[in-house]
Amino acid sequence: MGAGSGVPGSVTAEGVAATEVVACVVDVIDDETASSLPTPGLPTPLLAAPLLPLSSLHATSSNAHHGTASSLRAGDRRRPAILLDSAAHNTPASVTVASSAYMSPTPLPIILDCDPGHDDAIAIVVAAHHTNLLGITTVAGNAPLDATTSNAIIVRDLLGLECPVHSGANRPLTRPARHAGYVHGESGMDGADLPPPSGPPASHDAVGYIIEACRAREGIWLVPTGPLTNIALALRAAPDLAGRLGGISLMGGGTFGNRTAAAEFNLWCDPEAADMVFTYGGPLIMSGLDLTHQFQALPQRIEAVRALPGHLAAVLADLFDFFSSTYRARHHHIAGAPVHDPCAVMALTHPHLFTRRLAHVEIETRGRLTAGMTVIDQRDLKEVPDANCDVLTGIDADAAWDVVVAAIASGGAPSALP
Ligand SMILES: [Ca+2]
Image (cartoon, rainbow, N blue to C red; front, side, top):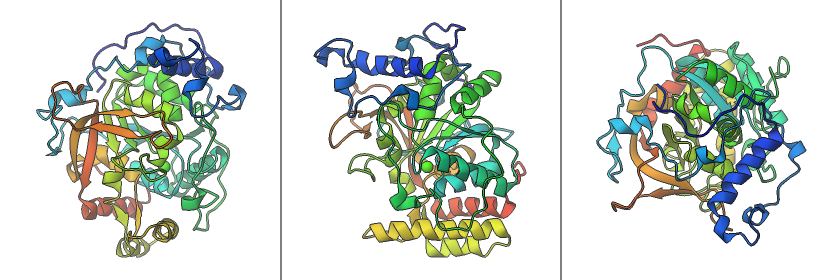
């Protein structure tokens, strides 16, 4: 279920190091705003923070291929194949879609790119039960990379999965790493008595793993539930991936923010990476805060998890309790933590539970108040660019919680197909 057309731009067989990948990223940023540069070719004034030493970026790809910068420019917007099926293309009206485009006779092959993170852990559980979870890749976000990687391995172990965990970028493309210990605790998954990870990650080359897996098999969906650094680096290093993916279903964005008034945490961490993902040209589904705040771990829902037999349910109920307690402590009016990340999985596995609108969405990469903002164009004007994103707007929260509970009850065992 690829995008159906080739990706412009040349691809060579030459390997490219992380330094070259990041240089290409800067090329894209630079080129789009070149007219505002005081000195052509110097990207630094465009960035909210100076470039960090490239040697500190762990995302490398020994198998990466080097394409031209033109392949991911904002002007190059191939319409996502999935949107071509919809009569609601580029209309502002909210529509309910039980899209056959997402339905598959076999579990969808996915790679979950995450930063566990309490809700990332739940996303792994749901993915284990309802998808063909090929691999898990980790990125710095809610916690530093070492912690998110350990947490992913711990959840993988609790579920008895054999899929590999590959660690990736330890900071955003051009900005320093920033974390969310105020929500998830210093470990990234505080609140439960967790075992140590069974071992190290399969590799520290998440980007190379993503590229290799997507070149070996067409139709893989990437499901990012953290900052989009790994995904951007993979798309940048291997532009041919855009035409091979099933699509990208991400958690992030929304019409309001949480880390700032305008920006959701994942996109705020790495706006430049988010910009590359939102302009990659293939199918794109966005589970933003508008949606995820409708899906809360309410006390009675947590108790439904705690009532399940087994160690996994007890651990996850403890994680839900901690996650919800930090949310309640920080908000005036919230009864339970929004369970953000599983929405990006269920958008694929249970599309009938969601309402959505197709829209043109761009990422604001600059601005004291706006960096990382998803600008969702809702104007009813013919001049509005084609929709590039399937923006999820509503969820049947009770039914979705049943999906989560069933996945936990299964212990991560693959679901019987309908
Ligand atoms: Ca996350």
